[in-house]
Image (cartoon, rainbow, N blue to C red; front, top):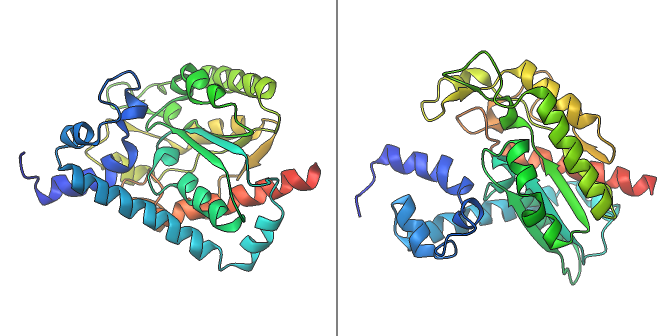
Amino acid sequence: MKKLSEEEKGVLEQFMIPFFHAEKRHPLFPGRDNPEAEAGLLGIPKEELETIRKNYDENAKQAALELLKEDEIIDLIDKLPFDGEETIVALGDSATEDDQGWFSIFKHLLEISFDKADFRFINSGVAYNTTTDALKRLDRDVSLHEPDWVFVALGTFDTQRLNIAQQRTLIPLSETWENLNTIHEILEEQVENPTVWITPTPVISELLSSNPIYEFTIQSEDLEQVRQLVSGKTGGIVDPKGIRMGEDEPKAWNYLTDGLHPSLSGHINTVREVLRTLAEIQAKS
């Protein structure tokens, strides 16, 4: 196996491993659950991949423990609409799939906070998914699990403007609207509890544009239009104004160096807003 350079290893650990799980990308491949095959595809030994993933999971757990030191979080936990036995599914893109992402932190938070917790958490995030991609796999990755609660965190990658086609977004806004409506209608019919919609976070465009690993840009005005579509849904709306990464403007420390994917602190901000939204849903019920 070829030894990776330090630069290659950095890109792999920061931008690939947290957002790549073979069983999600290639569910029909015979080797989808083979750790050695997945590690070989990434160009590292199986033990190294397992160690990196374990470290990310530990980061998420420590983030949950840090949150539990906050009085507001303790109060919010007491107001959550859960009894400890729910099946909870998150349908999303990179920010959801992330090994140390908001859903992983949220999972640890609930497992620590509920006595005899028997939750079932399904992370149905697939990196770089558009609303079209997610709609196509809604049955397999959400409905078949018969969830009690569904979180939807989509829309960012609909707004890609490819470097070779800057004149349009990858998915037209009208199609994003139709996709979100269809997802909403299906979930309303199948899931007893209201859907929780997580708005896309802003992007630091200059960091994204200067990153050589991406072949697209994202403009804030395109993302704002999608955020407005998401915020117009019924159910719980997480951060409708898109300010959880910084009130006046997104802060660099809440992102990885690409200005696109949230850092651990950025994910923690999302979890806070998720808890507040769930408490509001409980208060209204």
